[in-house]
Length: 184
Image (cartoon, rainbow, N blue to C red; front, side, top):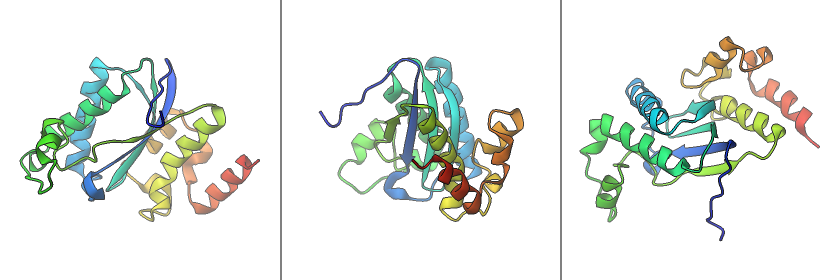
């Protein structure tokens, strides 16, 4: 029973998705264009709402609101459409024993076959997972301030008022202060 996934209508979910063998394939203009197109196409047939998203070179994190239990279909479609748009991954021949199955599933040599998922249980977790997404480029040392990372929902959602204005300066010092307020 430990690998059972439970889905809730109108549920909030946090995801971590990685590249195949944690190779730095993500966070390029070409990948981001393919990913955005795949997300748009998937949202047309299997809608979900994006609360946060950040893409780093070898992994990404996101928070979604989903109103049904078809989450695996969404990820399968996003991965497959992104891979098909990037010809260097659809034509590559992986040298491991599961390469045929990987290509049949649409993963190619771009994606790790699975993803990590967590059902967000309350408002506190929701805010912490959103912050985690925003802070991740700083955590991994790509930027000193999260606003400088181009592959995140942070700047767009700050501009629209979805995120609080005091999130404009997410850096290690700021985050210590914020997470310090969440300790029990």
